[in-house]
Length: 295
Length: 135
Image (cartoon, rainbow over all chains, first blue to last red; front, side, top):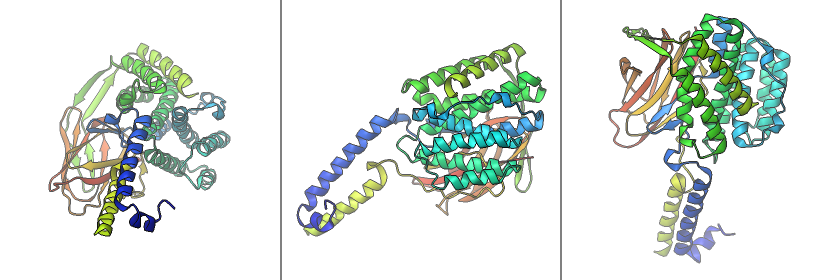
């Protein structure tokens, strides 16, 4: 009735529209101030200041682990009840972690464990207004692709992207950075755990490289420090790990790139070095971070 | 006269509501599904500016990465540069509205893509996707 065009144009044409515009502006401003941590840093694009920060997919770590040591450690995966996670922040981080876990499991054809974790993902998404209308269909695709790890990782990435898109267009787009943080925290813990078991030199190198990724995650989260208790706790723990990485020495050598028709091979080399005692401390911190923040 | 004024105001209202009154306008995602055999890193990078955009990137050795840029602004020209963390230029090109390039890296790489519009006076939007494939 109130939006009837005839009613609008014939009875209170100008005043009604003006009042409505003012009212809508007021509602909009009020809503933004209530839900966004800091309007100056508002973004839905992983952008801080004038730089957009990217973080590599956690599945890349799982793929490198498979190549470098081909070890699956089932002990990593505790039994936990996904229904205990109440806040949106917690659910966002756990969602990221579960997607990482499923990628790692699928690379090692862990069918039973994957099915258990698919149920957890299903519960989380059904209870977080997920934008995936055909969730059952997508999860069935995962079940039907057991043994084809590339296909499963593609499907998981599709779920991740669609969920992030839903978050991006929601009232709380900043939760997207927590999905990314949760995914990395889980892959970082898996990497630490496997290195501790194997002392594999390739995993050692991969662990050192996580310093850069941690720095970018901190950049993504930085605007929300002291805006929300869960963000602050998470950032404090990540900064503690970043301090341990501070002692890394990095050597750099630049060589000219090679350009082919469609590919560029970048040959500059960054080589980080760190002593073992720092890695032990980093492993402890990664375990504590995962335990307190995610599970 | 009154009716014409009302129509103008309603038009103004619709224009405003499309942008900032009810929230941020979202550039459309036009690159979806175009990584052709590469797995997406799960993120979408949207440029919505007339200034130089900077994307801080990290790439592992052992993968081929595909960088894809799409824009609905068909005539744009962009200066597309990849610098490493020391500021050395590793790749540069003048590109249009539909571009992709593959990259491989000798070691872990940390650097920035700089995307500078050349012939753009107003804001333009573009989307960048990053995909990866194990070598």
